[in-house]
Image (cartoon, helix red, strand yellow):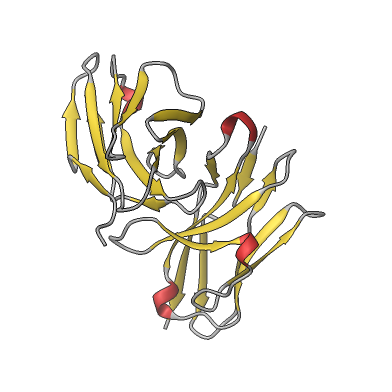
Length: 111
Length: 111
């Protein structure tokens, strides 16, 4: 059984640019959630996708958007990057809602 | 608004001593509560879910709705328990699927 994978591992972008982060869910999981984890903080919920539809959203602006594909993999897109977007971005997949299995994360640095 | 508070950023105990990691929550609905753990250089993983009432790796957690607490306990700490521990609250309604995390407690078990 393959776990949740994320790409890339690290990324450096300039303020104002756009970024796409990718997540492959664990086999058999149809739900993907995205979280942002700033240094020294717990993860913060961005949104959740279930069967290609956004199923719930946290307190993030519309420049944070996502997609889920028929194979249940997912993308997180962030437009007009700001310095405060520098963080670890975590993807988690689940077969139901709650037992979420996390990926290793993508470290995004905005300069 | 929903909130999860872990009052201790750092907790140190000696091997064999009891350990209690505190978690308090604020939520108007019926909460789903979890403990997640992150060992050094590993990904975030689910340790306990309150409704399962299981003991995992010797850890237990009891939901106290009166005190709005979900403290994690282990009677005899082991060195391999050293890790970052996060308490998380699952929401329903329009934020269904959202996990709200506390800031985490770093547990260090000394030999």
